[in-house]
Amino acid sequence: MWKYTFKRIVLGLVTIWFIATATFFAMHSVPGDPLSSDKATSERIRANLEAKYGLDQPLLSQYFIYLGNLAKGDLGISFTQENRSVNDIIREHFPISATLGILALAFAALGGILWGALTALYRNRWPDTVIMLLVILGISAPSFVVAAFSQYGIVNLNMWAGTNILPVGGWGSVGHMLIPAAVLGLSTMAYLTRLMRSSMLEVVNTDYVRTATAKGLPPALIFTRHQLRNAMLPVITVLGPAIAGITTGGFVVEIVFAIPGLGRFFVEAVQQLDYTVIMGTTVFYGAFLVGMVILVDIVYGVIDPRVRVDQ
Image (cartoon, rainbow, N blue to C red; front, side, top):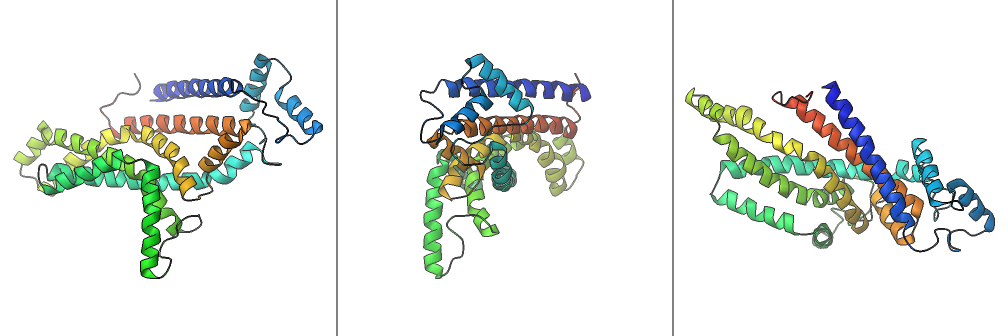
């Protein structure tokens, strides 16, 4: 187990290095001057930034300066936000994105397991048909479309009730979190529902389920202990990529619902060509997602004793 964990961490560090390298050279291939007059208001500011990032040196020298700063945990200073470092932006706004992502992931995982189990339990009957139709709609509809219709529904609900039952946008209370989290986790929940249904149908025909049925165990016990527990394992394996989907999808949801999360600042940095914020948040998100995938792989090896992760 320790050997496997060490290998996964090393491969994760290599992946983060590749993300940082690709981001650096991609940003430096973009035409234009990152320190144009609307970003650096004085020659002194320009000179200080050039000295810090080596912008007046060859590209390879800038690359090693960039890697050295990353190794020290320094993601740079924003070119467009006065006196704000990328570390401060992440520290202040990532907890908001993380809260939204955790709620969306919980909504997706619980809903996917529940609906997937129900569709397998009522296979080829009307609950199965209705849920799978909704699953197709959930997978097909883009998050920005669902977010826009959700806001429209909230406005009509508030008008009908004559009071603000749910806020249309912003952040700060539980009411602000509910609809954005549901919108963000909808497509992931639909995907997990299909996966859970397929897994449940495979488990139903296994020998240990037949044996439990032949022994006369209660159907509820067979369903919870033998079918549901084993069918959840494939769902756990895709939670890492699911976190990636929810994280990147959060950019659009945060913009639509005016949530001051890190994804919103990333989109604004792209619009303003704030290179240090773009590179810093990209590397941070990459490192975060790689860490989540490694954690899910390790947890899967702990949960399923049939998996020999130390080989």
